[in-house]
Each structure stands twice: as C-alpha cells, then as structure tokens.
Image 1 (cartoon, rainbow, N blue to C red):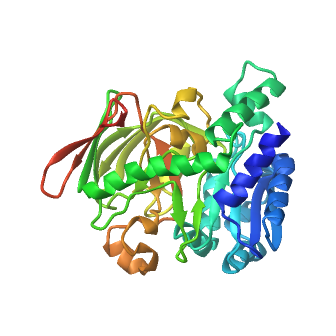
Image 2 (cartoon, rainbow, N blue to C red):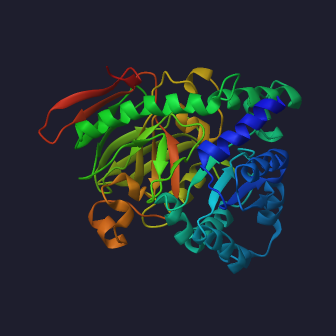
Length: 408
C-alpha cells in the first residue's frame, strides 16, 4: 500500500499541479489526512519545490465553532487568511486541495450561519477564486478516505474495512495501480480530448436534455464557447489536471439561456449537508421553482447566496458507462460523484470556457453571457436513459448522448 500512496503523491505533484523548480506548493488538508499531506509535501520537495505550506482544517472544530461562536463571527473574515491565499497565489504558487469530509457533519447546524460564512468568505477570496478559475495558477483537487466519510459510504462495515474499501476505490479512479500512473493518465487525457474536440467541432447552439425521472431541459450555449477536458493550461501554457479523478468534458451555458426542468440523480453534499432528490425549473436562465425531499432549506440558502447563484455556470458531459459510475458507489463527495454523472453547476462559470475569456473584463464577460457568482456548486443529473440532442446554428439536430452515453 505504501508504494501506491507514494505513486499517488508523485502523480499529484507531477501531473496534477505540474510543480516547477523553485515553485511554492500550498496544500489545503484536513488534519485527519496529515500523513498523506506529508507524502505530497515530500514528493513536491523531491520534484524541486522551493517550499511547501500546509493550511490545516478541522471539520469537528469547525462544527463546534458554528454552534458556539458569537453571532458576529459569521459576518467577518480575517484579513490574514485572505492574505494567506492571495499572497501565495500572486507568487505563482501551486495549490493542492484534499477534499475529504463527513458528508453530514453540519446537518444540525443553523443553515443561516453557514450561508453567511460562505458569503463573507466568497467576497473576501474573490480575487483568489478568479485566479484559480481563470487558470492563472495551477491547482488540483484530490481526495483520500476519512473515517466518517468511509462509514457513510459503507455503513455495514467496520471502520477499518470501510476505509480500506474507500482507499481501493479512490486509487482505482485515479489510475494508481501496478503500472505507471503518469502513463495511464496520458492515455486517459488523449481519450477525453477526442470527445472534447468532437463537441468543439459541432459548435452547438443548444443542448436538449430528457430522461424518465423528469428532466426536460434546454441549455443555450454562448457564442464562442469552448469545451474543455482533462488537461488545462495556464496563460503561459503550463499543463495541469484540476481534478483527480476526472471523466468530464465541460463548457458553460449562456447565463439567460436555460429553460425547462431538471431533476437531480444523486445527492449533493453542500458544506456538510446533503440535499437529496431535488427538482429545479428554469426560466430565462434563473431557477424560478425548486423542491427537495431532503435539505430544502439548504438548497434555498445555496440559491440565495447572491444574485447569480440561481443561474448556471457549467454544463458537463460524463458517460453513464464510465469507470467511476461502473464502481456503483455513491461517494457523497462531488469530486467523485460529478465524474460518474452528467452534471450542471450553480453559480460562477469558468472564464476559460469562452474564447478569450481569460483576458475579458467583468463587463465583457457579462455581455458575452458568462455567469459570475460567489459560488460554484456542481450537481448531478445523469441517468442510464439520459438523451441529449445538440442543435446546430443551422437548426440541425444531432444525437450527443443516447442511453446515458456518448452517441456514436
């Protein structure tokens, strides 16, 4: 197992953020993941990093704070924390985030406190987030098991067995096995590029979604939109992988161009709460009706995070018959569940998904139909019977997805 963990750490450093000689690496890590964070740090130093800085977080302490801190705390954001992220980002640091948490750690916390903390954080870190979403820094989101998360996925197993099962699943999804994972990722990126190139060649004006659980949605794509997948690039042309694992081909919808109804196909883990079996109705891009069997109050806070969080910022295609989906595991973690299912995202769009978007001003992006928001939250809509029809600018209809997979 140790050998595979070393391979994983090196893969994150070399292929994930593509660390450069004398570059700084910032690791965001839960304290429960300290051993693996140290492995990533060591791999980074071995690859020539100038320094490695770790930003630790403790979800249990975070819950205590939400329940017991003074009310005004949730409307404040420490200046030193803002400078931590911005200062390193401006020094061209690379960022690795280990996304591993108890999916329901905050289920008994006042949702208003969570929403206020999210809003103040989003405002304070706006420049940092814009740098990441415009690929001005290399960044990579990865995961490893934690005890509470593993037991949520495998509730009938002991902690040790559940953690081991989750390790095996994660390592499989990131292609860390007996062979060379760097070589395996090169092949995977080439396969994703074929699907991406196909979507870019079509240059669709609309995508129409339908399935048997109630989705009947039309998504307009803005002029000059770009489909991306696998590898991404900084303005200087440095390659990196933003998510490990990744199985998606993604772009952006036109802000005011989404109409119809969409039904979720998997739970959404949103800041320590689960939103399940939710339905959304869009008119001219905005959610005008919504319901959820579980977590409706949390969904409401998400949609009311700011004036644009009820609009969409991402449209992503993932085959139902894909490696993560075929594991038949509900991860309760967006990093994995979004790569097992077609998905959309509330909130901010990636500026790199439109021609010259990384150099456009906010006003130019808005004019081009690019949504801007303090949040970006993916939610899953893919099913085994999902049909997607692409409509060209000339009105020709093309089957994009049939029976949940890319049409041949």
